[in-house]
Length: 251
Image 1: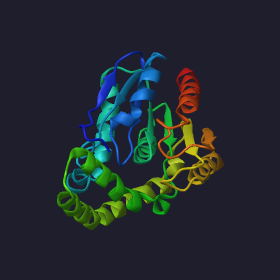
Image 2: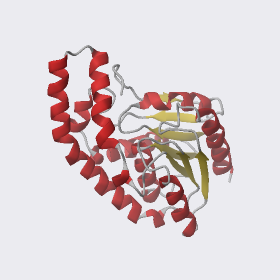
Image 3: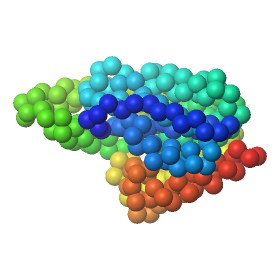
């Protein structure tokens, strides 16, 4: 989570478009380095910010939910289509990966896409309930709130969080049940030291897709934690994503 407001960004730089979707506790900032890297490969990049994200953590819980984030995802796809992109891929980190997967299930015109550290088959095993209040506390401290103000907000977060996590779990189960609708090339990146989700979930997803005949490009980063786009695996991830997109777009 960031103290500054997260803002969407668009880097127009080529006839092929890539949508990058951020995680549950962040904003487009986690995608900026990857976006700049892909821009240098001559791709047009769009990274939206999900409704409610990018500022006060309570806003995520009070003023948004999975339906809003799905609408945001559909808007991002339409935006690049309206720009005349010849082909579009969609990739996401954690929650963003869930939405990217749903997009691939529902839009066969997308060239491909995939996930980074996304619990498509195992959301219920995530540590989000534990980490969300911690991340929120760090955000409020950085924002300069006093102890009383922080405690009041954390109490409210603990009241609201279970309902939203249940809604995300329901969305995830629906996505998992419709994986057979994905026929496009699919990228899976997973860190071996993921502190947020089950580190085996990436392999489980890859095996499930492969079993149904979906082309899968699976990458495991043994020493990496959850936020693959900025942690110690990011350079290798960027190279792997670049290779995946080159193959996907040139087919």
